Image (cartoon, rainbow, N blue to C red; front, side):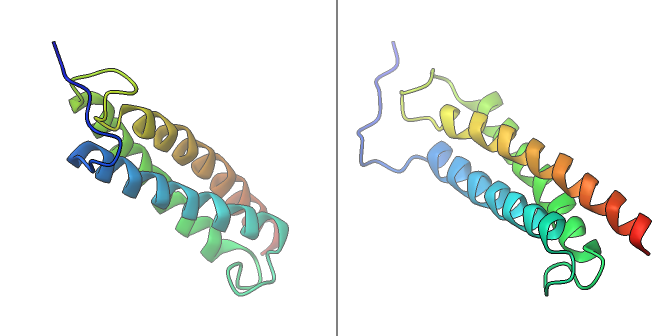
Length: 110
């Protein structure tokens, strides 16, 4: 039987899930900015840079989150990072979808 990790213990799974979540959130925020304000610094006029950043950050977050989910040996709440891995998968997927929309919009505007 697996013993749950301490609440304050940062296991390898938790650290990788945390990094994946941060990368996914960065991709999500940049994709939203590219959609809402394509003429800003992130969008560089058409939103292409923000869309590209989101389309890179999203799959990275999904790959790291999938790695954590696949290699964790306990369930959610055991300290292995499985919950964070699922969140990173979802946030990375949303970043990819919104980044794709921003890229399609930038191609129409160009």
